[in-house]
Image 1 (cartoon, rainbow, N blue to C red):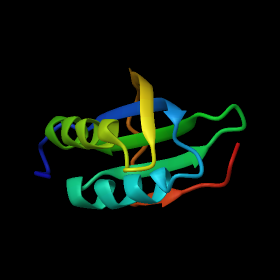
Image 2 (image 1 turned 120 degrees about the vertical axis):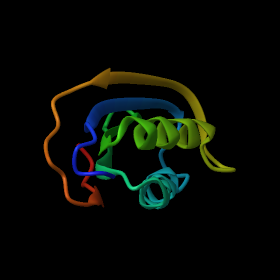
Image 3 (image 1 turned 180 degrees about the horizontal axis):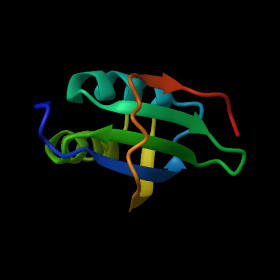
Image 4 (image 1 turned 135 degrees about the vertical axis):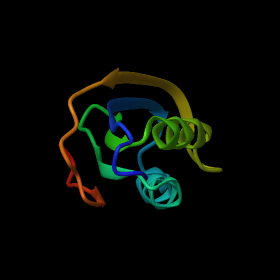
Length: 97
């Protein structure tokens, strides 16, 4: 990402069959491929929550790839909201909330 390029930050709530399928680890690999920083965690309600930051193109690519899921995961819906950049420096898997 160029120094003068704007940072896009989104919060994503993913629903479907996304827990117990390797979806968080898959998403972490996709984040590395797309140069995305942020985090991912399972939620007690069965959804997965993601905070993702990068250039608009990187975020778009990340969202498009995780929407496909893994061969075990089935993404039913993704609720995506823009938010203020937090300045994440890596992409991590957080504990369940």
